[in-house]
Length: 451
Image 1 (tube, one colour):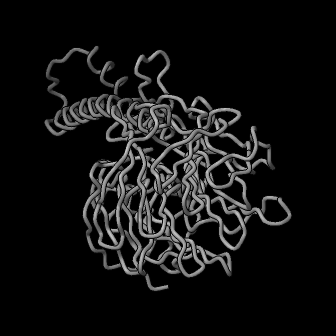
Image 2 (cartoon, rainbow, N blue to C red):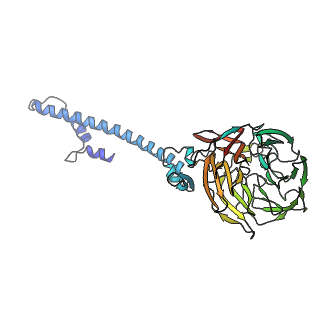
Image 3 (cartoon, rainbow, N blue to C red):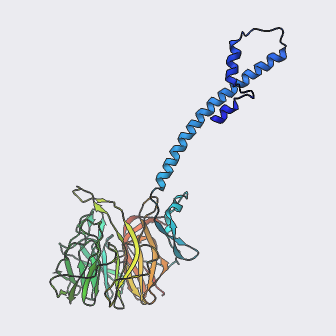
């Protein structure tokens, strides 16, 4: 307002207001010795000063209001920008690789669609197959020759399955089901097979966000009979599990509260569906803990791929263990164990990926991974599903993106038969332009792989 006060100063330093008061104090009667021109000038001067004074008052009110609004705006803007310094993995169409962009730069944009996280990938020709008998989320699967065994999983957040469905790849039909042991976990299982026996380790018992169990079982796929094995030293939720060199290895996962990453690595000697030892043996801890990882044995090496730290937890005091969101960090780290029995860090995935424990197959000396979840949207904090098919070349130990799924989806259950890549079940996206999770499905699809 100082510039407006300056506007009201006359050249001789006298303000308009002071002149008005001085003139008003004088007798306002006609003076015959003054001519009409002088009277007119005074009247114009008075009106002009009054007008400028009124304009100054209005401008002062508007300036004060504007300052208040500006302060509010900058307060909101600074709140949106707080604490965003980590890097995001972003697709770069010019290189077909992931690039890193600072989130501060992203926040300055007016809109960031979820499709921003999709990587460039060729289209694949997908054929829809018979759907699974029930929809599944966080189930498990093992393929033995032409039979696909699909275990447990959520039907919805309040209901879990307690049976195994079977699919025959030879004639593409679902051929029956059988029950699981009552004491076995219902989701987030660790599974591995030697070609006849399927080992099922730990997992979550019950719906919502109940805790994990330490129980371990083995299924004879010929007789369809179950037997128990020594329990894990402590319960684990979605641990990485695989058979390697005559031992059943279990590592990582989440601890009993579902959220804290576990680093422990145990193994037990097994043969023909039986444990050869009474207790699990401690092994070299995995460098990074957490659930929802692919665990693969190939070329006599053990690989652990992707995963996350943190997960939903039961709401404190909830009688039904209602799920409550917690902070999660999804990563694309890849680790390998070989003859030296030391973890080696390999080239990470093209983008962070989790919920892929049974989403992989091996073909042509390559690990193929379908779907999953990646980092949350940096602004909305919503979960983002993955719609790419990744290939890990076991010769060069490098990654590539080889195709797109029919839609983005997590916790797929993948199989491979006669040159076809199959996947079924999981939780799919809300549409082509919305990668957030929505419907739990039992759909099955296949595509001819050409690697």
